[in-house]
Image 1 (tube, rainbow, N blue to C red):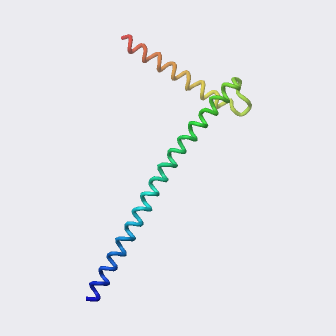
Image 2: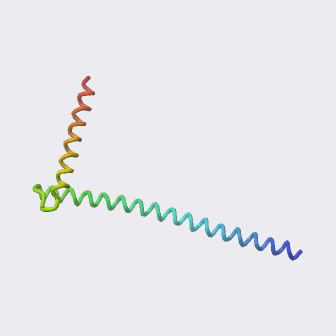
Image 3: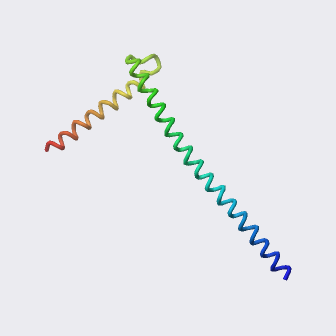
Length: 91
């Protein structure tokens, strides 16, 4: 009989340990989702900082020339894509 009691206690302890681990995993998942959300907030903030910087500095400061060129190339491609979309709508 003592063996069954010990077995029951072991099963109970394993169940409690499993529940604790599941709770930890749930909290970990929530924290990871929070971090992803905060990373997105940072990206938006950096983007806004960049937009304001470019607006206040239309001539690229030294060291920023390539980044400004990339912005110009992206704008040109966006304009070309929009023009093509309009052509396709007109057809």
